[in-house]
Length: 240
Length: 323
Image 1 (cartoon, one colour):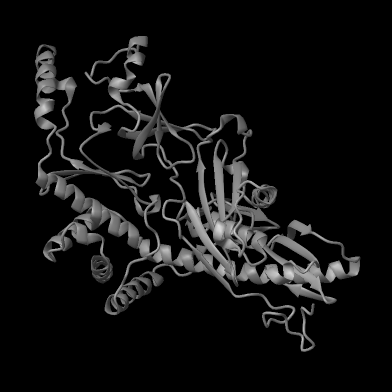
Image 2: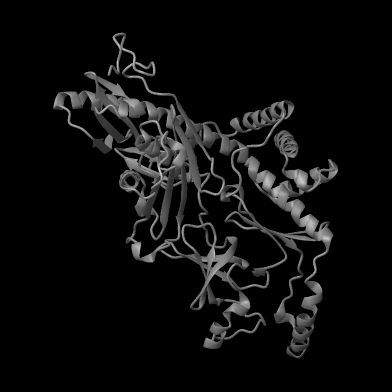
């Protein structure tokens, strides 16, 4: 199948280095300490953060560090074909990946004897849910006022029809080509997540990786804008 | 916490009025401190030649001072720190807090305070209900549920913060203790300002208002604070008997008081929804506004009243600025 037509346009009309539209909003769950909705095109994820709060299971307590927990779930209606199982292997793996990514950017040592819970729910899945989840979690953690080293952001890229493609959607994702998900800390310029589910030659991988990193930086810009706007709003409303 | 984003069904005119009020608030505040708000990883400008102390919410990376939380940069002498907006309660010794008992443990109660851990109220740091001063015995320990049980709302003072971050409370005065006949409201802690007075008695309505530093606000029927130390021992027993017999009679709260509690409660909800600082002055003003505009209690949470409060707040801040 042709994923990139001769004019250089993809199935949904984007160019190879074009991202889908991003919509982000914080403070969407009233009871949570921090919450956010993150949309990338038709992929939509809602994140809620609770804590830092008292550790519920004392045996899990770590000395001098906060405990970070993450639960990822997909709404039954998020995909075309209804999925029924809840705790499948994919969710467990994703929960772990997201937990590790967020743990790396949270300053857990300043919050001892406490627990931070991150809940992620995919409302619509159209490729790149992994990235969308990380971005949503970052926004929600920042909204909850949890100290962080940096804002972890993530973006995916792939390689189809011998073209590197940024931000794959579901059709491109299931085409069987490589799917590289990259998570970076933009300020510190570090990679916190790198996943690939196919083989790529080294040179190709490097271009794809570079493309994904560029995407991450663009997302970081957007995330910062949202947080800046929100912080300003809260401050001038409060100021008495 | 409570509702955050304004998700009210505004009509077109209400929307315009609301946006105008918010714009006015913005223009009023922007002249006060410009661009002090930072988000995670923003560089905080500091003069590196002068010595400075890095406080909460900052970290030094490659000689740059970076913010680790979203908030507002505050400078006190050499200290530079970031004051967070939406975050959990950050305790200081001497703060008056309102909390909910979640567990009765050995010689202590665990209290939920919207802090990173549960607060601890020791039996020994409580005044005995009869006011006597003595060592707590094992009998007292067994009778702890006579004082507080789970889900009771209590008011206490922060005694100390341990180095491991746990929080000790004490309630060594008659004004602290169990709170009854009222409502507990939860607002974001950044909306509460520390002040000299956190206990308020609104005389015109007969309502007690306790604005806890942790963002828990108690609105309840007024109770007279009795100081048992003042009582002579002989009278004490009579008083005990009479008070126990009179509790049944007093357990009825008049309808008017209940309505007043609800009205104040809703005023606080509206202020919290709009993200305005919650002080007694603003609360009473909001209550008066609702009365003068003939807004029913249940109508206070509608969009129209939100708009009114926002406009009123803009006007109030403008007046304040003039002075």
